[in-house]
Image: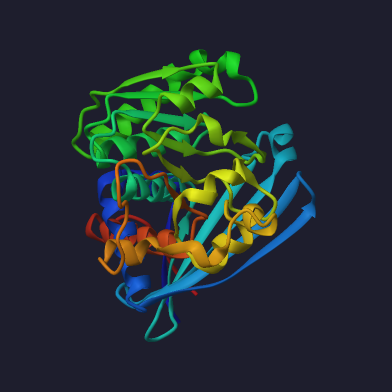
Length: 340
């Protein structure tokens, strides 16, 4: 009989901070680069297209001595019953014995680890003198993405953002996002200095920015190639299923491209459609981000170069952060122990 620790979302929120999550996700990328971690094929099923679906991402991390999975489900009609549209659970097993160790609510972890991933791409590939960040999307994940990026790139002075479906509402959504950004940063012991503002013009936001992060479920490019100035870095975080596309495929033609997982990026990431349309060859992908972090390849090679990080989201992020939450929860004697 095994003892499994169950952690609620509230308990996870009490023990984790964004800065430590960034370090954990970097460590997971490095382990993958060193062949000490593996990502297994993703499972995806649509119960009702655009209304109800689920996906399972799984893998193993030798350095954390764990393997496991995260299952996320989307049921749009849940809001009619007063339930969350998006729900997720992470299950961790001991790699040596196979024993289940923890069942962890994946909600808060997903927000933190997604923010960490995009920020790692920015820190690794953006120009060091970058001052302007433009975020496309103003959903629940966005405050964590902004917080993680400002923690990783303290030189950023202004963050502009846009709600792409209803751009005229962007300015009115900023206050709520700002409040969460400040809370997340303060939990890491960091005070925000950058200005946050909403704008209604996509083209204006793209043209004036040094760094662009896309966080939408779009299936139609929102950014045109001619808007992107030389030296820009783009972290594409929203494309995580086949058919999604956030940026003009022509941007890939002369960009230096990195991914979190090669197979996943080619099949379901921002790279997918440009490759299928013949605008980009998968052989031109420089490397996975872990290889860059481990110094196996060069990142940006000039201040004029456009760089892209295709962050599809991999199970290793969820597993390593869930393991971090489990360790911290044990130290505080938190969680519910269940014998199974």
